[in-house]
Amino acid sequence: MAKVRFKIAPDIELNIDLDVAGVDMNTRDYDVQQHKAEVYGEFEKRIKQAFPEGYRIDTFDFGLDREESS
Image (cartoon, rainbow, N blue to C red; front, top):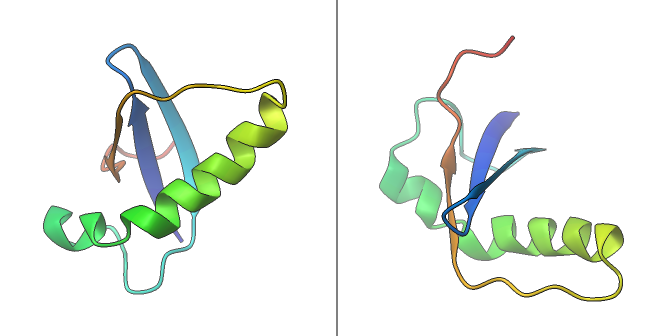
């Protein structure tokens, strides 16, 4: 499972573990970006659970978390 790092807006960074077919720690950034709908769909599902009253997202950028896991 590849750990995908989400960066929401300029000041918030969230991490999420998501199993994405064909993506591992060596996958090129361009190839990771081809899964935007899948990644955003999982994020949206989780954010709706956390904030059922509603939320607003202005920007959505993401990429693999290539930092060493602890």
